[in-house]
Picture 1 (cartoon, rainbow, N blue to C red):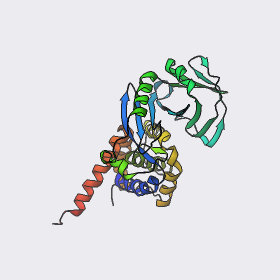
Picture 2: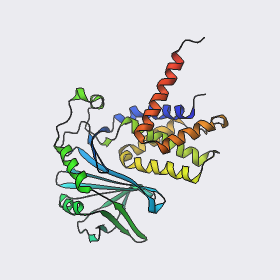
Picture 3: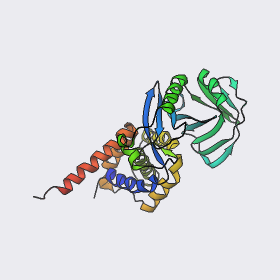
Length: 292
């Protein structure tokens, strides 16, 4: 039987062709002072880029938080993600919005989906964001605050990205593979990492495997950090994994599951994807080698 990580990788790789038809990947542009700026491949609009700040809140049991910001003409989109949220898909949420102590009067319709809230504002909000350090939503049962340190530096990089000409197709393997300027997702590697994370999450929930509270929290944190980017294909990822079926790892694969879980928690999404790819290549080489 193949190792657990390989089985999970095979599942994730199997669903990727189903996703490429409905969502285009993004490519890194610049990382500056905690903000990751990415450009949507194939997007020929005036605002093809977005900026993301992700961090663990040490004052909230290391819960994962993420802030995503992008421009769209005279509008600005703000997405907030928190590991502890669980909104229904397309749930309408009315909540007062503050930047530091300043109440924001712009009318906004927040839309929930799992661990994320999304809203659009006039781009006149940008000066307030540039001057702020914290985004605050004031719910009836308490506040949700999100740190946005060095927002100005990230915003400058975002504008550089929006103004930069797209790479020629020959310079971007991803761009050559995906021509449609459809909704964005980070990369096939990150989709694969997210799919494997969902498998690990399911194993922890439904199977008799050893795990600590710290490990389970780590898995949930990684999934929450990836989830904002996966919103355009969340339903497809879960649906395709369900089609492929699920079974608990047998007892003799417990050690391999533990190693897969360790890698998922400790490695970055890109490093985890690279580890999966390397393992698949190693196994292919072993299968192709002449038998003694």
